[in-house]
Length: 117
Image (cartoon, rainbow, N blue to C red):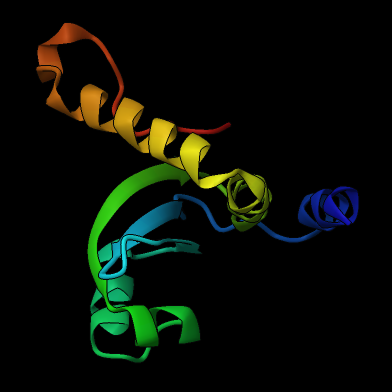
């Protein structure tokens, strides 16, 4: 399935400068929701308004706790599939690592958002 998506991506036209984001939301019941979007702020507002995924309608998202940046939708979908298969403990470890990177000063030379090529 993933190989087919990657082959299709090569055949399709790519829009220049288009970025896709993988994000993880922390919900009111302490569960985690993973998704992709081109605009995280807009998508989070949709989740808050109850117009996002069915999962978040019942569990009410509290905050975006993790994000990664990708150049194509296919790359983001492949990563989303991988992250969704992780157990919650590994997702929390990923979030903790991201939180540590966010707290490091920008001049430390560490990239917060992982850009995929």
